[in-house]
Image (tube, rainbow, N blue to C red; front, side, top):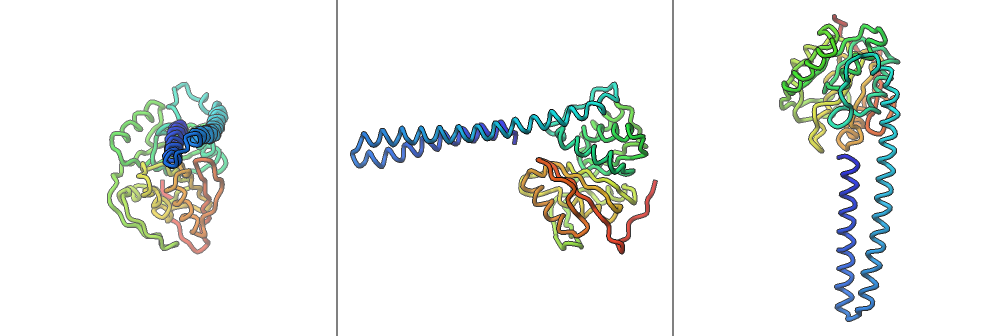
Length: 291
């Protein structure tokens, strides 16, 4: 939920609470036939409530300002990359990834220079990743997994608009279906909807970088948890996992469960994103790298 909407709900709820408290105090004291005390109690309740609302409003406004500043700074940092194309890059934020997580994700790609990237939930971030790979002159390739065929078509059209070929970005359509998954390392079991197994078979044998920004989550369900257990067998040593929306309860719980795997450690925790590093144990095999 946007900060402005949460702030409005807090203000409305606070006002309602003030009136309820004042009315309750008034009813109790009025029953005792003390009208002067009733007026004082009501006035005191309203003044106290308004002061509390002022503090809540100030806190949320300050937090929103900090968020906007972080977004502005991140977008400014992306300017050189965006200037590398004469095309209009899709907007960030809303349903798309915000500028701050995009900036951190691209910084990691610049640092680790992955050759194979898998993205759950493509969109604006896909365009930015490929622009970064081109600017690095890196031979990277992106495999995007999308469950919605209409959105998959929109992603393909956007990639064509930027002139990205199928040898650079591959969009894999994989419907969501009821699944039961078990993480053999942590023994966690999970039940819900996840991509069909055919999508995994379409991926290369070795993956260096994973972006987890899909599928769209259902509050409290944690639909994105299977991403790591599902693809772990194909991760290369020192593979990076970048997860967006980790300010939400389900995604925070997802990260904590992933970190129970001794091969997984935290790179960075941001306001709404988390990056992890996967270090493969020496005795763990990895799939053969394929073209």
